[in-house]
Length: 437
Image (cartoon, rainbow, N blue to C red; front, side):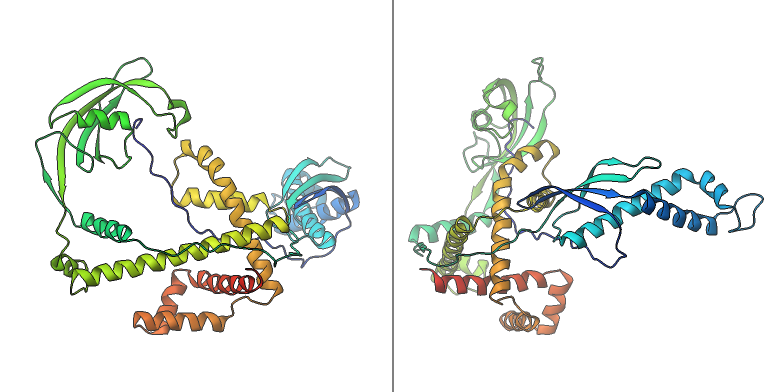
């Protein structure tokens, strides 16, 4: 609905998958010519000789002959010439697919490629009596040497929690427990409203409105629409031109002025509970509001420490990446972007904008993961199964549950890899921080 702001998507962790090809096959007699060998991009021209094609056709035709049932012939006894004529197109297609797949395996084996993505075939030519030729485009895993990982300086942000932050957090808890009651007056920021909104079409006609439930001041509607709503008393309506803000997500709507009709159906106002001992007991196992305040402060301090640590890690990775430049497979970057889109169900019309905005973030995340993996492999810091078991035992003790039950639950939800990666990251950054100040 024009006039309503889409909810921004938070960040999430995304696990990329790297495709590895096996080499368990019979070597092929093919010619490979490198057309491009830059960064992680490989373009190779592949030529499969006529003799290999004929051999593959004969083999495929024999397979068809052993299975084909044709009128006038016993099963598997039809002459090869008849089989080739009857199943010509199917045989050619199967031969083509088999040769391309086997040729790709041969290229990977002979060129010793560490494949990062599924290959793409371009400019394929497969004519009778001529060699099969095509160009193979593929990305490979980057070679990361990390010649320099020490001598960098990082600044650790101060971990400080103010009384205002504690009060703000307590107010959010009160807001969650607030009661709503209808009021017969103009709404104000913070009120919950039920409105009927309609925006004029391109021809100026205002269609029937749609009902929305909004919290005023929450950024769910553009300022111009909120201003109209706050002019009304329940049951009233207004129709007036509204200018769309210059930073509206839909670029086509930015700066446009269109007639908008608003009907205010209902206004509900929040009443926050008192911040007292009774409220503390309602929130959780707290004897007093002072105990609740102390817990809130401790949680905020722990969150601040995590943010500070994350900031330090980001500084380190950024400096290591600048000192050790390398290309990253764009297929991994796109995969991460696609994962975010699917996770947050980005509408089709927003995907292009979201992808463009998120692309640099995704590329930095892929680069970060590669650096962490490279350090872990080189310094032998990767977590073992025993390390994961120990971490789960610690988690189980804190939750007062059995390690076996927690392990089974984490395994079922697919979180064991997440724990393993977390332990590895802790070790990598601990090692890096020892070498940098």
